[in-house]
Figure (cartoon, rainbow over the protein chains, first blue to last red):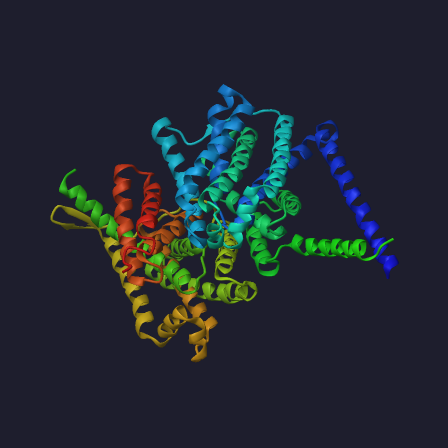
Length: 327
Length: 290
């Protein structure tokens, strides 16, 4: 028995080493990707990056606090319009950065107003904000400029790819930092029990606003980056309601507290989208809706939660082995 | 602005508000009683509108026949959806908040399914038809006949729903289940069945409102979400679970919307939302709450 446990322990340890090596290899592979991957795959990876950013930054706030925000499309759309306004004058990178900062500023304003609401009221408010942003932008464009949509000066596929890759890397680094920081602890406390968190002296409103802003920065940057690929943008495209729901769907599907699992979920989603949109363009959204219902009905805990629980069991088993049996 | 304009806006707003009230009453039954936050609510309005348009254009059926058809059809569809999906969701969700979030996400899936079924069936174009185009003159005021009729029907239907809840046995059971589910169950109410009927009444109201909308407004397959947002605002405005409050709130929002549309077309939704923000700060339990 002890022998097999020891064996399992070393298997797990070498597994962890393998995982690290795998991650390093993946990083090198992704950075060099434009050298050997066809253009189409780069576009695919860029799309994947967008969904990973939207999902992981959504989890960053909602996963720990339990506040189901549906404002993702608003922040993404603000980024899109930042690219519309500043791509030509200030260049791609500055526009992307401004998109993120502007989204964070709006998130701060929205947060102060709405984060006092609990549960469904907060979700409704953020949901309504998408409709608000769409019709306000449409009205502003028509009223002041007499137009519906606008053209964004494109950049090369490679630039988009690297920008998205950098954003994803930055987001994962931020994720790790936040989880280890006081902010992450405070966000989790709020998720566990908000009243108790307030009682032990956590400034709950400010913590929530900070978390909300942090998640909005990344969504805004992603919007600015994607806008340069789409070239034509109008309010319906920029503030696409779907972009509020897809991150939640991916997060729910993959188990809402694990960013690496969420990235896998996003991969699955983009692959499915890619497959279906070319083969069944008219039935794709119908299927998307049905898949969403099915996921909610049959896999409410998320797929990776199961895998994660299993992995933790293996880890616990090997730890027991390390402390329990001297060698 | 002269008096005629003001009267125009007020009457136009009240007539539009009747429809808003009917849509919102439906959402109120679903969210206020069954606790299902149905984001796909507006899709039943779209469905009712397209069905009525189609029956009128393809078969020459009166929109009021269409109304009965879409009321019954969306009632049935709502009942099936509740039994198949929302009743089952309840089983593996622990807290009320988690249930509400799960319902919202699930109904988003339903939203996309219905929306795209409509597009697949009838195409993505904007549609409209003309029915009873005449007008009535009241002094200086000119009122279109079809709008008066629509207002009358929507208020009448609202009253019917109210009476149903107030005076029938099913209505009593619905109110009991809304107040205390386990209590109602212990005195022999089949709670899931009753909540299913309640949810279906909600979709039925949305479908009927869609038929009325198709008579005077142009309709398109993605119009539903706007009605959902309006209904959410009206429900908060009138108070959760308050049926007359929904009708009154709908009319109030209709007047606000018509006034804003007169001043700046395109800003109505913005005004609704700002109204909502102010309201939630000032009276989070609704205007009519004690």
